[in-house]
Length: 316
Length: 58
Image (cartoon, rainbow over all chains, first blue to last red):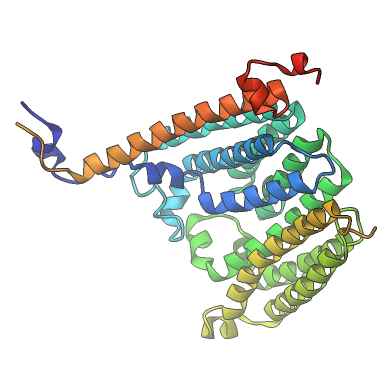
């Protein structure tokens, strides 16, 4: 009787035999947390109550759709992921998962998530999820990412759709409130990624990705961060006076936008020598703050919606 | 001859098989749950008794 373990050809670990965790990593679980959270806020902030189980399914399918687009992104970008230090340990460049498998998983999960979201909630939500996956994979990954320094700006729309999908899942419509949540994430994305590009500079250079730092220079990137942060602050604070805002949201927005503006101002005023001397401490702090910034804003919207159920949220 | 030594390869395959099994079980649970909610508007008791939303007058 023979067994695979007795065969000498299997004595070495085969990198192509992936474990479950490797397939899960294809779905970009860290990005998924942002998708899940913002979609959940969109769903719960909507004025139409959703059955808890349907709400759970809607968020799950949105998360799966986000994961599927991550897998398709890794399939297409396997060549540049191999070059970049930050992404070289991903399942495909490290040889643990075959790129064909990633493509198959991405396509199957995309179809599954859109169809089931439409069945669980409504056609608009399913259609929006399908469009988001298309936008992220085709428009951003295949087209914009390697061709224009505006890749992050336009491609950021893909990451901004989840709250709109959550809202549509609950209401069956696209309201002005969901557009505001979309705009918040959309405007937040460029300064977030440009700060990352400033301190992960060799990565994008090596991969030939035309980030703003590569095409327009690092000085220009610092200016862009400041300009987008000013626009974002106006939008974020202004949202406080709308139907999804309220005193709690406004307080959070004022404090965080003041800190964010100060961070962007500091980045604008720094030169490369000073940045290199402290290993881009200011840029790294700004990047970390940007993560808190988005979660806190959406957390405040969620809190306002929760308080509204007890007659306390918003401006009424 | 019994197999006594578990290779790293087997561990990975086992984790993959367990993962797929759990996913299939979760898929069945989700489809069942969605069906119950859609048919009964969340009245699980009525669903288990075979009553539809139409019969409940919803």
